Length: 554
Image (cartoon, rainbow, N blue to C red; front, side, top):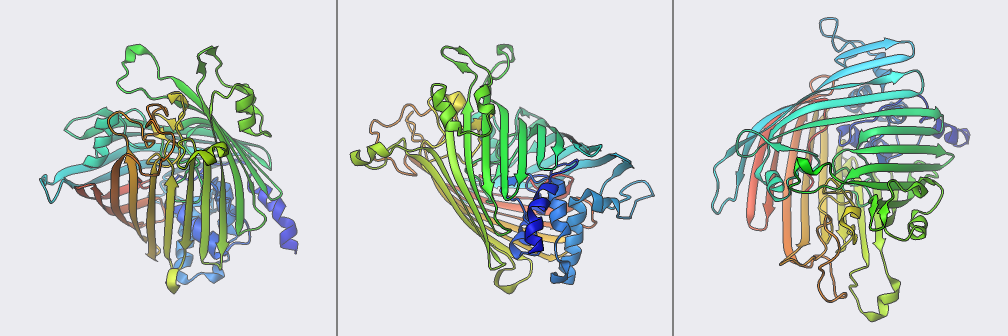
């Protein structure tokens, strides 16, 4: 009973003081997930919205009952807690030549009363080979490589302000299927501006990420800067994914009692292919998101989601940022209609439930638009734009410690995310804000993770996608970067997968070795991919430091 009474106070305390976020797609998220599902901590993990703040994640791991872990798992837990919790790392002792990695985690650090500065390298150097179009018209094995070099500086000033800066230069020779994205659209998945470099498939781009956090009250956290987010517990997200590049954002997170409210504002870019520099900047676009989640205990979470994407230019003039959307306690759709209904509004629901200390069930429902008034006129109305996700995670599967499995199914109907105005489509920099492949699709992911030793990790993902593409200038609803015009003449009889059939089967795997407690991994990875009758195979090996694994989900 005392624990239940203290729970609301604990939820608020997890937000207070200075903070940074964990890197998206880092293995830390999987570890936090399994601790949550196993019920080893007597508190709530707020897993609906990523990235997690380090303070909240560190406080969660600090409350894990390590007596329930095996000796190997306790060593693994110590590594994960060291990477997550700055205060825990500050008490660690180690060092290289007495100056570097003195806490076994950070290359350089400075600790003063009311001030902390941490400096770490960003490095991803991998080399391998890629082969395409086999067994028919097989191409020779071609070299591929990743070469990322950069720096991360983060820390806090006082008790309420945190900061984070990451810069890196990237020289890549991607596998052919990724390079095809550039030749088709001048885009590399998940990245912004890129340019050709050196040999045939060589690419070069500069990446940067920076933000400030401020916690004026125990229950409120404010984040401003350039970053990306993933809303949901799945491998994919239909509501807001991290597939698109980093974006300028302002995020407010409040946790009071059993409620979590997040209000998220962004300024994105409406990407224009083949734009000349003399034509000026890319047009801007704005988006607002919010979610109210009810979390009555540490096994259940239910969240209601809304978003609006809009452009500042209208036929009757320039309106800039719509101040009406700053109201945090109102339905966005009501405002959108009140201002003349010029914008792209979506709403949704997400649910997570941990069961039997081994299983997590999760799902999302997305509603872009739905017209109940046409039900008597026929089926497959084009304007009924919805999507849904259903998934399950099974940790310590079949009694095997540290073997964790995941299965997820996604379906997105045609024309979902599209709008009559291209600039208001659910995209940023020409890339989806929802499902990574767009719309007019159905597909699944099967994920297996195994951690046999504290320093070793195996990660396998099998994916299958069925999608309908446009044909002969007709919009069949799969490309989310075009407006919903030029549709087939019949407004009814639309179905998921209509258009030119497009199928992808993909198997990817990664073996990681973390020889020390620092965020340093030696890895080998491979990928088999089949698109229609085209097959490709790639393999890489190298070093990854201070950066999350690179994943292209489609």
